[in-house]
Length: 245
Image (cartoon, rainbow, N blue to C red; front, side):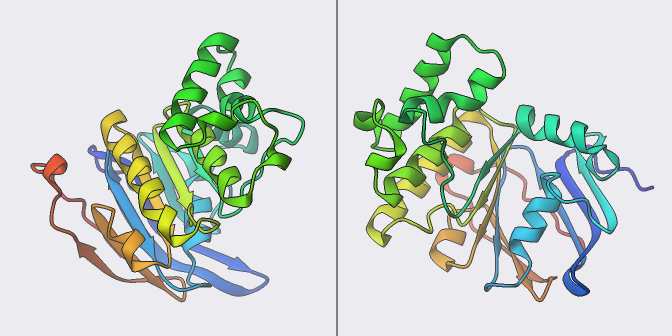
């Protein structure tokens, strides 16, 4: 077993995964450093979601390795992977899944409440993120009273409120109108940079991918290239990650 690089917060080597005999990932390798925002781009069916699920421990690869810092995610038991996801990772789905019985702020605070954080502190963190995402005025409403786009904003706030070490975002602005996408994505990426959150962002939209430090392209479950983007003003001096395939 090859040890991951010392400077990689997330590292994967030669990942393989199939769905009913059809290859979804074929030998994909990836290295992500702390605080980096990596866009995983490709058309529908290219393997983006499968890669994020393997990296986050939701799926165990059929072959290959996934490491979070010095922890071998690919060898963990299901309960340990679940604990890792709950305590260190954040996840945003393309379609928001909220608890209908809870208010908006309770949904956003749920990961913190499940960790045992005091209710007042959890509410404060949740409301702060809801306000950043322009949904703070709906904090006391329940999900059924919101449109799909606003429910997605709540889901994004829920993922960011616990300040995860790594945030996995699978087409996070899919339910939003194009006019809202840029604002929400810039809020997400700016917050990630200011809080030192590493982000792996799956998208089929080139404009969304361009918000990352680097774009890795997938096609038919394989890495086809990696694009190094010019550093933004706030990220100058950061060393770019390498990708091995």
